[in-house]
Length: 124
Image (cartoon, rainbow, N blue to C red; front, side):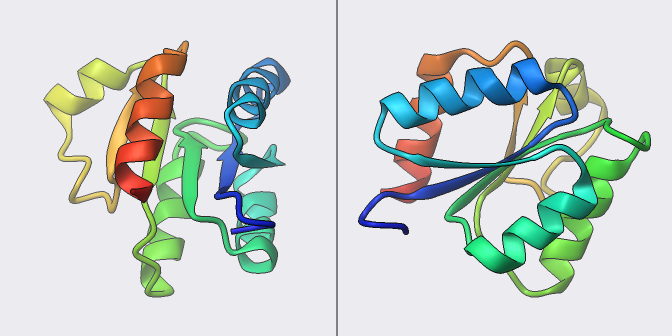
């Protein structure tokens, strides 16, 4: 939390995706912290202690998103982490996202209503 607002860490190498997430989140009373690589995301995670994370599946490396999640979970964090993917529904069918350490998957482009409802439900 920052000034009473939940902090959402968004990690994606697509600036347009980050801008869209930022607009939706900030208009709905969330603090949006952005990173464009998994490495930058880890640094922001450590310095900002977010309440919720949204991370792209494929960034600078094919599995950068899943590697990020593994590292966060290995550190003992249990905060909700949602994968952002252009193959979202197919991922649900072909992989066990819970086994990857994820709380769920958002399909690109993200539906703002689904995003906000999910965050609100997960954060209470």
